Image 1 (cartoon, rainbow over the protein chains, first blue to last red):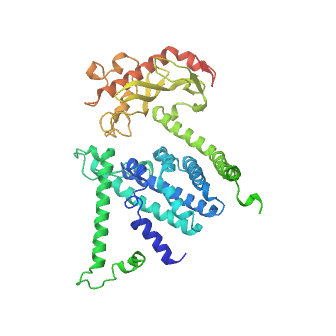
Image 2: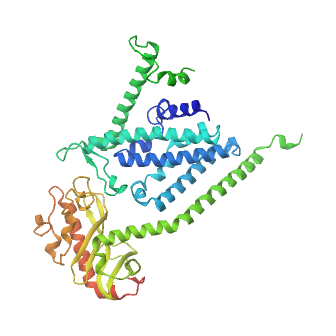
Length: 238
Length: 220
């Protein structure tokens, strides 16, 4: 894998085809789990693990899987790997499992996992497939973390509530003090939709501004290539 | 060319089914292997989790037997609201009864059942109570769970320790009892208090029988 390929995979997963903001895949956990930051980030990490394993497994076995039954086989592979991860978490990361236990099985139904297997790992070698899975998963993790942080902050004025279950001794940040009345809507399912809508709007606004700047570069910009646009835009314009 | 060149639907089905079966075998084997490899660790952490909870209601230094192995199974007993197959653990020191640790259920919480772990000393006094599962309103009724209680220094649930079995001890002050409660969520406090009271009464009445039954036996 060349550096250029790696860069492209990273840019696709983290920004251009971000599962949470651009592809809008994997919304089930995105909306259900993001009531606080600790849950959101923990589930994001578990999802990265499952995605990397399933992309790796499918990429290795891709020449043995007949095209006509690929989807049942993919689902079998994903379900088996989620079961393995679920058992492994229960056995070796028990405190994390107490937080995530009920969410890990839901990863089976996260369409981003099947989507990357079908769209990428079924046609590409093992290494790039794994990198693709990690980058896509990281893109989802980023959105989950921001969504979780915003909702938690709006709902209760805290950040990182529940961190003590992962890191004993750590405690949540109470940013707005005890007098903060709380904004319950943010913690409820509609709050997830509203917050995600705002994030997608911000994402689109940034993309539009970037596109506009690429067409009409500001004349007073001293170093046009210094902000990394030159590197990033090369694969985009193709 | 032979007929193999254009297989009919049945042949395709059989061939793909065979491949499917191979994959199923492969990944089922992976799951079965993981299940067996992780089982001891999962059992250990489940036991550790249970022990941690028991330690919260009963001081570990007060008994010296292997508590988790010294239990009796009780059937459906209306007073403490135990489910079928619930366990009552016996704590002993030098063979003498010290306390009973039992599961109890408050069926009348604000949002359904509240599952409790109650430890009762042989003197009839409560040693400690913990809420193990509940669906009370976050921020309002969930103070019954010390992890959610805002008052970390004197959590609400701690007031049960040392109480003897008297009717007033299991009623909120609002109902003429002695149990403190947080305003706006009397129902949660009343449900827990009443459930602890029922468990205490039942354990007192059944006490000798509960301590004497052989470990692992089932009481009606």
